Amino acid sequence: GEGFSSEARLVFEGNAAEAIRRFPANVNIAVALSLAGSGFESTTVRLIADPSARGTRHSITARAGSCSLEVAAAPAPLRENPRSSALAMYSVPALLRQLASPLRLAG
Image (cartoon, rainbow, N blue to C red; front, side, top):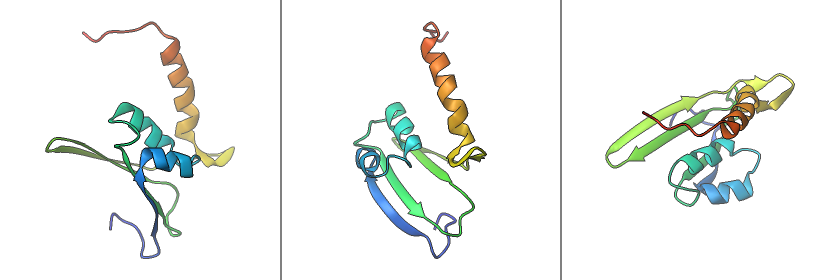
């Protein structure tokens, strides 16, 4: 299912806290979503290895009551380090700028 090849296999399924302990190099999205959502213990992570995949793909489902939001992202690899993504390279400086800026209230 979900667009994976017949060679795909489930490597891990569990909460984000365990995924972070076991796969620290592969769960930056899970960490961010856990912090923004319901926490590490109640965020579910599935890691799937698919040898026929053309790079990394993140499938994200957020649920609140009977509503759900599904998003898929396929980050481009960073040219200087193909094991990382270009998205990560731009996200860290943006976060640091946001943390250094004065507090802004909506409205």
